Amino acid sequence: MDQWTLQMGYPVITILGNTTAENRIIITQQHFIYDISAKTKSLERQNNSYLWQIPLTIVVGNRSHVSSEAIIWVSNKSEHHRIAYLDKGSWLLGNINQTGYFRVNYDLRNWRLLIDQLIRNHEVLSVSNRAGLIDDAFSLARAGYLPQNIPLEIIRYLSEEKDFLPWHAASRALYPLDKLLDRMENYNVFNEYILKQVATTYIKLGWPKNNFNGSLVQASYQHEELRREVIMLACSFGNKHCHQQASTLISDWISSNRNRIPLNVRDIVYCTGVSLLDEDVWEFIWMKFHSTTAVSEKKILLEALTCSDDRNLLNRLLNLSLNSEVVLDQDAIDVIIHVARNPHGRDLAWKFFRDKWKILNTSRIHSQDILFHGESFSSSILEKFSLSI
Image (tube, rainbow, N blue to C red; front, side, top):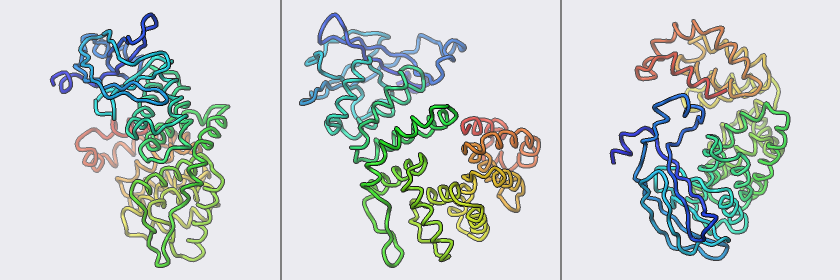
């Protein structure tokens, strides 16, 4: 166990088909690092002595059959193994149901066979295996082990996916990717591709409904989480119906002064409404932020205020965040970070952060040191801010 508890990080297993002999594979292991360039900069990270004893579970499958699970103990940098039933038309899947603490990569041929299987009949693979494939593919691409087109091709099957975990794995990877690509000329190609994958499931699931007494019509937890995940993706990437629904719910709240927005999608509706509608909606949310006493609702409302497309309102909010009578000390940094996540506020937040650094690093240092459990405020906020932009 020392290899897992004392060595830094965790491994990535790479499974390569042997081109000269059927039923043969090559398995390699190496230290998984997101920043590939760090491998050459840091001798510690370049440490080739890192080895793990890895219990690699595998199955072999094709369009009509999946083998029983087998286990291979991988203990060397590179090993050759014979696998039964593995032929040219068969795919191989490792780390079954994500029970091992490592990532798995394959040669491109195997990735394409797995993609083909997902498109033809994704239910051949378990929910955990589908989620694991998506998570591994996006993480491997982000770290440079895999071309970026592979994870994007994997999610082509999502319109047929009915389970929460694969959707959650996809959305968790897509939001950071969206932040990188929204500055590119051809961003609309990526945006339309994601909307296409989401559309069918969004229409099928719809929005949560309230009973006549105002309580939420209950479905299973997994179903509600899936619906929330799909609605968030649809609204974030610009689905017109999603935008219209969010605007209608916000307008109804303003006109009736009764909040009938289902609790589990309030943050999505508030943010979407503020980004789409005029300044009056922002002022309404600002008023509700001041009047509500519920801490959880207050946090959602404050975050929604950072979703505006109006740079003047974002600047106003940034400056108000320095007033502890208006925004609590522990929430001020969150305001800057959420404004930075907004494409319209990214540069504003960065300028504000630099201009107000002395104030941020001195006037709030005591409370923030408590908040970060002794870690220096400056290092904590720099790390958080850099992740947001």
